[in-house]
Structure formats: structure tokens, C-alpha cells
Length: 334
View 1: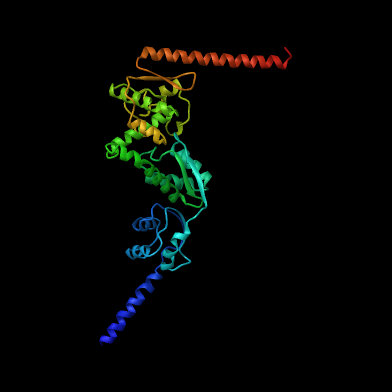
View 2: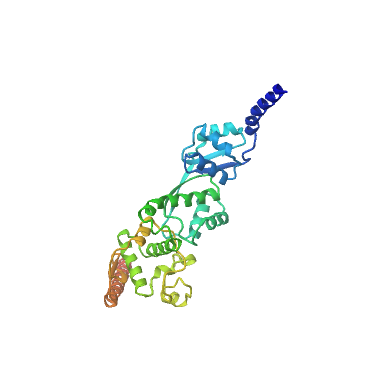
């Protein structure tokens, strides 16, 4: 009897790994981004991509070569479970594309471009974005992203959000008091998106941030065109008629305070300006003839800058008209 029990135990010990090897992982080919060589993160990543894994797999992974961070083209139909984990590190793909996300871009513009550049389904991309986002806009950062060419909608968007989070970590360590409060984070992103709409000049960003904070502290309306560049109006010129007709909370000519949500993708520089504005008494800024802004603290000074800009536009238009006349004269031999 003892011998039988011993044989049975030996048989079970042999069959457990044998049976384990043939438990199916997943029938699909998958393009997966593995963000770390840590075995627990590898397991978590694979589980998030619908691979059927167990606690035993963590042990098996620890006995093999850990895959390095990167994109992997995984086919689980060729191998048993042991061989799959043994050669997982060899499946890293070099078939990638560089995708640029532009500062000031809306999520609609982003998914339109991604769906075109990577031949992905636009609606699935948008659904994935909305499932991962904290705000309606602005959750991800402007910059360059390297994405596997055959990545699906969820893997693509999941990677972009993950990479944005990694880029934020330096700011989070520098300003921990900001990134522990969700309401504060939303305000920072909203202010950064306004800054992004108002200027692309990095040196001006902390100045525009100071104007925003100064006006908020004085309970003044922001009265900034950039806040009206939201959604479908992202790249539309702001006219007096538009200011009068737009009754949304994004219209800071009509309503005090910040818009209800960030209005676009932002850069790290815009975020840092929103967190750390310069100290000033600026309340106004106006575009000048050089394409940058003049910052002042009084309405009287602001009006002078407005008049100066209008005069420079008129002079430029006059020069253009004169140039056209000269060209027309030359055509008729005068």
C-alpha cells in the first residue's frame, strides 16, 4: 500500500508540470508592450492583455530570461507553456513607428491622425482614450512615441497613457504637493492647456501663467481667446461674434474662473509653467508685430499695445497691397 501511494505521489508530481505545460495561454497573436523586466509587472501586463496566467507562471518566469522593456509580438499557439516563457525574451519586435503627439491637439484630432497613420479603428481608439482618461482632454503629453506597427487600439492608447505617466514622474517628484490632489491636478492641466493655446514660446509660458493666476486672485474674468479653442473650435479664429454667441463655460469673456476641463494636449513645459509661474503684477498681454507678447499690469498700457498691434497690421496690409499694385504694374509694362 505504501509503495502504491509512493508511486501515485510520484505520478502526480510528474503530471502536474506536464499538465501545466498544456494549459492554454491564449489563442490569439498579440502585440504587447512590456514596461518592465520585473516578473510581477510582466505577469500583470500579460493578464491585462487577456492572457490566461496563474501564480505558477511567476515562478516559471523567474527561472527564465526576463524580457526587457519594449514591444513584443507574441504568438502562443506554437508553444507549450514552458517554452513560451522560455523564449518570451526573444519575441521583441523591431517593427515600430514613431508617432508625434502635438501640443495643443485635441483627443478628436489625435485619434483621427492615429487611425490614419496606423490603420486603426477611430471609434475603438476614442473608446480606449475615454476609458483611460481622467479628464475630457489633456491627459496625455505632447511628444514622440514609439509604437509597434501592428499594435491594436487598446495597446496603442494604453502605451501612450503609460508613457505620459512616466514622463510626468520627474514633475511629480519635484512638486509632490500638486500631484496628490485630483482637483488641483485638473486645475494645473487646465491652466497648462490655456497657456499652450496662447503661446508656443517656452519663455512666455511662465508669464502667461502669472497673468492667469493674477486675474483669478483678483476675481477677474480671464478673457482669453485660447479658452474658446476647445473641441470642434480647436483651431478656429476667435471673432467678436463668437465671443458674444458662445454661452459655454469655456467662454472666459462671460464667466469667471477656469473652463470646466483642459482644452488640449499639453507639453511638460506648459505644465511646469502652470505649476511654477513667475511672480509679477501682469494682468494683460498682447501680441506684438514680432509674433511674441507684451505683458503689462494696467489697462491703459494694454490699450496702447492693442493700438500698436492694430497699426502694425494695417501697415503690413498696406505694404502687401502696394506690393500687389507694383506687381500688377510690372505685368502691363509700367
